[in-house]
Image (cartoon, rainbow, N blue to C red; front, top):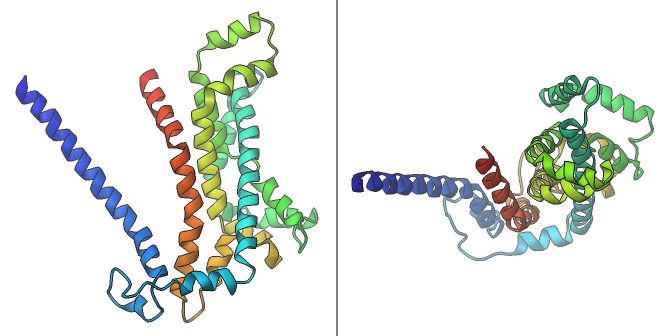
Length: 282
C-alpha cells in the first residue's frame, strides 16, 4: 500500500514539474517582449536577456508619436471587443438554449449545419462578404465600418456549441419545477438557466474578448479610416519593409496584452468551476 502511495506522489511531482516547465517555456516570448520594450534599438540585436540600462523611450514614443493616438487605438479595440462579447453572449446563449431544450423540426440538422461553419476559414469567404458589405454601404470612411464588424462577428458557432453542451448538463427538474410554478419560457431562460451558467458565460466572454482584441484580418479589410484602427494596426505602424522598430513595437505588444491578463485573472475561478463541474457530472 505504501509503495502505491509513493508511486502516486511521485507521479504528481513529475506532472507538476512538466507543468512548471511548460509554463516557463510559454512565458519566454512574453518575457522577451517586456525586456525588448526597455532596450534601445542597438541593444535589440545583442544576446542580452535584460537591457543594460532601463530605457522607457519606447513607451514615450508610443504615447506621443504614434498615429492615430494610443488612446484612439485602445478605445477602438475596447469598443469593438466589448460589443462583440455582448452580442456573443446574447445570441450564443439564446441559440444554445434553443438547441438544448426546445424541440422544433430540423433542430439537429440545423445544429450540425451551424457546427459545419467552423470548418470554413475566413479567407475562403472574404471576397463574397466584402462585395456584400460594399453593396450594403458598410465599408467606407464612416463609423458604419464598426457596424460591418459587428454583423460579421455577432455570433460564433463555438459559442452556440458551448452553451448548448452546458445547458444540456443542467438538471431538467429545475426547468420543470419553474414551469409548474407558472414561469414562461423567457423566465425559465433568464431566471433558471442563465444564473446557473456563469462559468460558461465567463469562458465565452474571455475567448470572445481575446479573439476580438487580437483580430487583425477583418479589421484590416473593413476599417478604412485611420481613426477607426485598432491596436493590431498600431503594432504594424512600427514594422517597415526593410527595418522594424522593435522596442516601441514590443512596448505596444506589452500594453495590449495587459487587458487579456487582467480578464484571465478575474475570471479564472469561473473557468475552474466549469471544468470541475464537468468532471463531476462525467
